[in-house]
Amino acid sequence: MLIFENWKKIFVFLVSVFAIVFVIPNFSSNNFRDNVLPKFINLGEIRLGLDLQGGSYLLLKVQAEALQVDRLNNIASEVRMKLRQSDPKIGYKNISVENNSLNFELINSNNYERAVGLIREIDNSLIIEGEEDLFIKIMLSEIKIKEIEDYAILQSIEIIRRRVDEVGTNEPIIQRQGDDRILVQLPGLDDPERIKRLLGKTARMNFRLVNETASIDEALSGRVPPGSDLLFEVNEETGENSFPHIVFKRIGVSGDELIDANPTVDQNNQPVVSLRFDSSGSRKFGDLTSKNVGKRFAIVLDGEVISAPVIREPITGGSGQISGNFTFETASDLAVLLRAGALPAPLTILEERSVGPSLGEDSITAGMYAAIIALLLVIVYMLVIYGFRFGVAANISLIINLLLILSLLGVLDATLTLPGLAGIALTVGMAVDANVLIFERIREESRSGRSNIGAIDNGFKEAFRTIVDANITTLIAAIILFQFGSGPVKGFAVTLALGVITTMFTSLLLSRALITIWYNRFKPSSLNI
Image 1 (tube, rainbow, N blue to C red):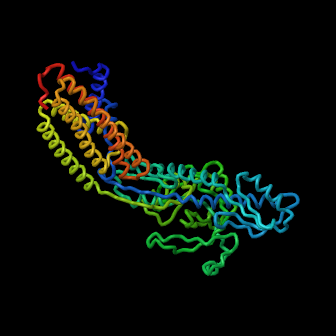
Image 2 (cartoon, rainbow, N blue to C red; image 1 turned 45 degrees about the vertical axis):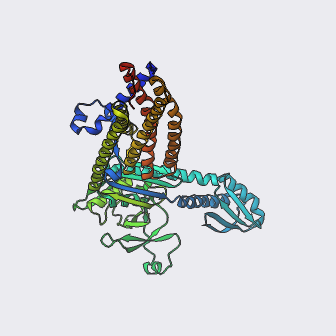
Image 3 (cartoon, one colour; image 1 turned 180 degrees about the vertical axis):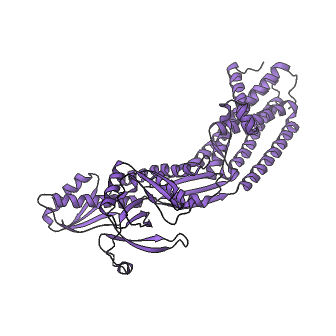
């Protein structure tokens, strides 16, 4: 009598039931899933990737270098304050941020040690280099740079998620990839250009007074007054910088103090964006408008002037409106950007792919036909080569193997891609190969004169090591592909890894359970394999 422990039979039975039950949502109608199936079973519904469902794929790079410059500029402001407030005052000149370092020159070399000590009080991790006790160079440490980059990535992911959610995209995938990249997958997206516009803006907004005494012509020729910036208002029709404005560098109110922004219409039925500030922003906005009635102030977004209206009266209620050459969509997009918050650093698009829904549907259809044809051919082959008894056991194992992969993909919330379908097809080959190894070993043992029980028992035992070794090496390759690959490569790696696990289960446990139950029940005189 062949031995197969009861706990193993129970385990095989439960896993097989799991495979059958949790694959049901993928082959049933929406009405059946919503009204008949329990909610926990609906966890098994597979999420399709962009190449099967259609949508957009974006690989973004976070330009964290800009944050280093911002941090050094902040340090420069603190250095100025420290040196001016020291007693006695420490003189300096030519302070500037260049090549990721803050540089300045002391007037008196005797103040070098004092200056370094004051700089250490600002941030003890700063790298400070001196030359002739006059020239000081300040740099950020590697640890600090890494902290800044990590912050930029995590904050950018959160802001991107808010912006995408505001647009209503279905089940977006937003995740970190590598040190400075973010992967954004937007299934079913029908307007990728709009998302690119939303993600391409840093959305740093502020309110600044216009320098109305300065000459536009002189500024355009390169002579911008100290303490001011030459900025342009973009012509919405041409997309070009058409209207120059000279604005003070000092920020009156920052966009960080906004708590809400919504698209609406003004009394002329023109699209505008309504703003609401927090308590600090309300106070600053009220002071700005109260002290500058009759003057113009510029609304600046990412270095461009949206509009520069005249302050007609004080605005003290903590709310206001941005008007400009808006359409209803651009007003809505600006509101989305302001509600979601500013990105800590600019983003650049490194890779972009878009797939239409019809192409995705064709891929699913082609993949299903290929899988069905391959499965039928394998079933026929196993029945012909190994006979009805062993062929049926192998085919049941193969079918459960496929169902188990699909169930796991759904329960683990993995995404099935076109390369993932290739991984499933490869799994079919591996599953068949494992059964071939076992059955060929059983055939050899039977021909060498062993008893039926000895042939079956030895066949599984001898093939065990070969199957495990082959699948473990494949699993290692899949893990490496998943760790270092991107996009489609990861989809292939996921299904390949799941296929390795399910193949070892079905070939070493399920096949043996089926053959053991059959043999102990019918006790055939010969195996006929």
